[in-house]
Image (cartoon, rainbow, N blue to C red; front, side, top):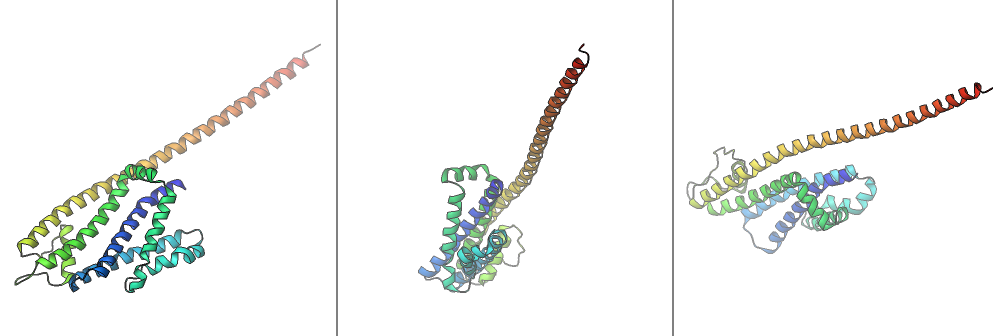
Length: 260
């Protein structure tokens, strides 16, 4: 059970990060007057986050020991906060964030949690890379839309900006959309460098994670073999003791039969 909880911690930290990001975008939309293009990009990002939240709701429901209790306590809030189109429901993510922080506090004290983060660097780094990639895609999409103005530009709509950001950070670069201004090319260069670093890091940590999983399986098999050997040793000791008792009884009986 403890190992299962430990494996959940990187995932919980990732959901916490998404919740904070979602609340920040919601707060920006509510407090700052944004242009329509920026609002559309933030809406796309919010919708993608809501999809993750809905999958998280299904995950929690599937793994809950008491599904009815989960639905009546936090489940309905998780479900409502996964709906992107209704503004009032989106503030329910604050309750989701509060619940996740409560779970993390219950699972580990702060010192132990930080120790876990340092020891489980592979999983936590993978989650951090994914979260940082989402932030970079959103921010670069907004930035490129603002600097790419004038004749000859190929990035006109928020969907164009998001497509360009995704293909640039993944270094796919289909060439159908590209920056033509100096500022846009600077943004593209920085985004490509970040993409190479992030996905190189992600590839390395995925390989390390697969190796770590294989090592954990080997360690589990070794522990199982050690336990089996210990049980066999105990059984052998018991059998030896039983044989000794039988031998002593046989000697005693033989001595008695030879008595005059």
